Length: 207
Image (cartoon, rainbow, N blue to C red; front, side):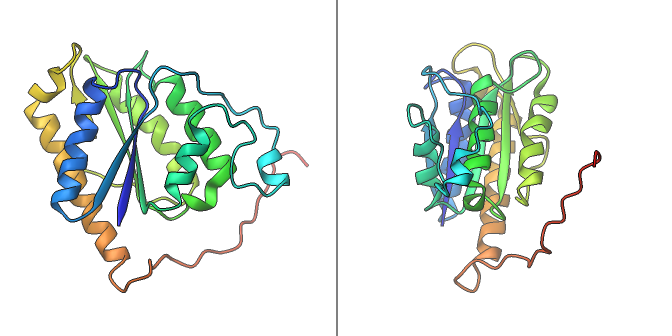
């Protein structure tokens, strides 16, 4: 079993990476493979609702000049998804939102039913709002949201400070333990066991 972690912060060795690395180490302690993908400072396109990914049956975005399709390819071999972001103005980074919008629209079947979690790192406040924003997409994708002993938050402003947040690091480890527990239950009989779903019955309010 494998968990794919995405660092949507710009700094490869920043505080978001510290939080995700703590999760990854604890997952591996539980016998779960973990891989962290760094978004970095390169541009990430926003979804333009062209729907070419769906009309052409691509299961990938038609724009192939950023990290999106690389994450989609990695998700084919992953059983769970975690995204971490620093908090900007009480929200996740623009890269975090642009990336998840395109991942779920273009390749939603690769994410559906797989456990997910959002992690936010902040100087002082806004982390709960950022987590709620990221969790909204998971709920629409039937992805069980993995919790911890507290909201999945670590505190730190300057590089390395998140490692000094002892409760935050414990929260990350507890999140990893909970993720490992859920994955082992889902895969207890070999192939993953997911609930059967009713066929979607969309209803638009304007007819």
